[in-house]
Length: 309
Image 1 (tube, rainbow, N blue to C red):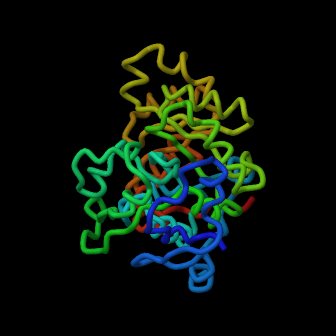
Image 2 (tube, rainbow, N blue to C red):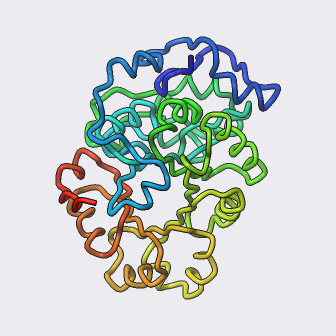
């Protein structure tokens, strides 16, 4: 039985020797940690989501779709199993995850090279530590709107794939991981979902063309995000990068002229990172189809209903 996104082995690392061990090590039994539960227990207690989620093709064909940025990081401790579960319960269409990789080959949700911002450590570089060592720390609620809520464990990427890969698109960004590990990541994804192209969109900052090009070569859709002041200030930025990305994104605070520059590419656009319904509505008005949302609690209820398809 696969482990829950909220529980992982807390004993000594058991995934060192081979990629097969890393990939399949979620297998047999999970030792529960505080706040954790098995995948079956989560399924049995979880209310049905408002919407069932969307895989890649129906997502990109939608009139409008929603993505939980870091599992809605303004609402819940970012990139925790708890945050992703709550996002799915809220009815989001897709999930965004940035990935780090431990010294013993475990891919897990982390935006930064270190745990310092999310856990208050000092110079704790994820790539220099084992998964067992990472599990000694928790993701604080300091960046959320409810700082009194409990800190949460880090979550392995494979546990997220096992829980939601059959129903939800994942926007995947190996933000701080060297390109030499991209084959390993794709191999891992293929062990946990039947068809990676149905579940995964490769996401990256617009200049992360090594990841984007690798993903497109292997049949994945890609999403590159931009900032309005940069596409105006760096005249060659769009021209030199946009072919890597099958879909594009722009910050919601960009000007109308900057949004028009992106629209001229003729690609599906996603507004990011949206803290409110007002920001989401403004992105839709300026041509966005997708909404990369940082606070589902403050956004979903304030969106107009899409027209019937």
